[in-house]
Length: 136
Image (spheres, rainbow, N blue to C red):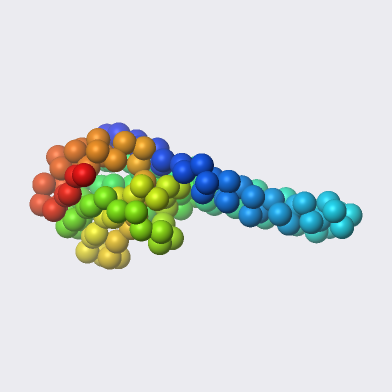
């Protein structure tokens, strides 16, 4: 059962990079008049869009679900031992550098970027009472 869904914050500069990077090969294919290259590039863009977007975080009754495109990561609340705000630029299912680092037993950690970080952390205090949660 889903308690609440949090969308990812999107930094405008990061959105521009994520959009521009895959569009460069499209522009090159058009410029070089290469329909085959254009077709492959458009196909890869479609896969990129489905695999990477949208990004959301679902607070369920017993676990946090991180959704990035077709990929899902389920983190049991019982495994989480800390959460704190960060501006780390490490690769993660976050579309902003205003992130929260979630440390948990099974895989170590993950960075997320819910739109309302404070509300997310307050909700997590309810679901994850055993975790050290820093709110700033």
